Image (tube, rainbow, N blue to C red; front, top):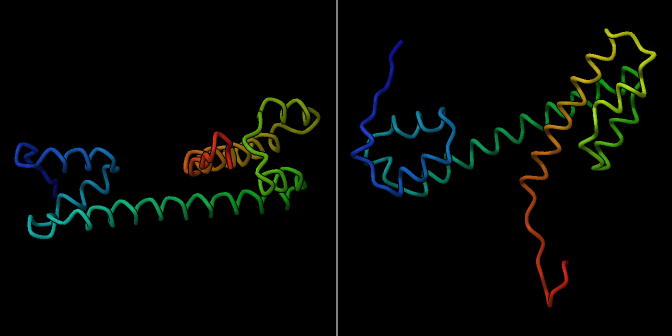
Length: 138
């Protein structure tokens, strides 16, 4: 296994700031590029955008699979709540509502709901700020 070591003293301050916004995997890819290919800020922006897109797609796949499981397991109301943007929800309330179910069914239900909570909170983080016109939110 080959490990990559990089001397950050040779990197400009702006590049270090950009590297701070990347995941370790993206930093590794970026730093493996030779200095000629690494120079472009556009290349850096593309690397970051690609990683964010892949993360978003994987979250959407996870959410879709969780919704499919919820419908198949007899909990379509939670899939519908997610699709209607009514997430995140309190898992403790769900456990209380379904206290009559076996633990073997409640645990996977809570796992799927936690997945949807995570995806919903990431959607909220990514949403754009609303525009203000004359003191009113649009």
